[in-house]
Image (cartoon, rainbow, N blue to C red; front, side):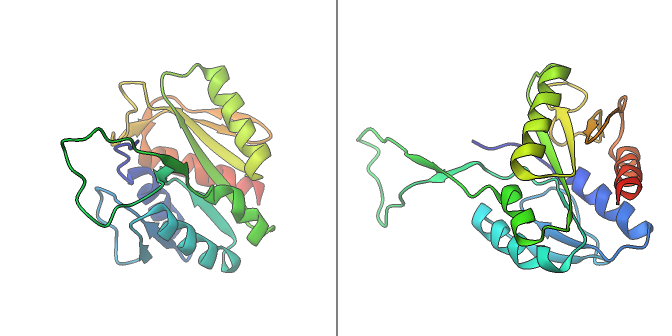
Length: 191
């Protein structure tokens, strides 16, 4: 239902964009990193808050990188009163909005980078999942990784990724700072 995504990769990408001269806006959910005041920051709590912030900001931006590990489901019905612990409780979930799928509808010319995390996945599964995201969300690039790898779990300082677009770039285990440079090199090569 949830994950321990830290925001570290997103922060490294924002820092690298800033170093390269970009005006950076960061939409920040529940993260464990400190966000620099150098960035314009929009803080959100829920998936719906994030969707609204993204939909509001995408029209005026050239590049959107979606590193957020957004919840895919939300509780269908909320109670206004306390629920007794003496009864069984069934929780019904419903899907949240697929933010990434709406970005190109709002701004067709934006360069869109998605992230795809799978757990204990084979390389071929990562590639197939990324290609599905490219098809379904019209992303220009997808950065895919296996968070089941003990060196690359949510919250770690390192990662190894596949950057999937027209070609596939595979990084060995590197710091997220180093990976952010590789991702930005690929973005700038493509725009």
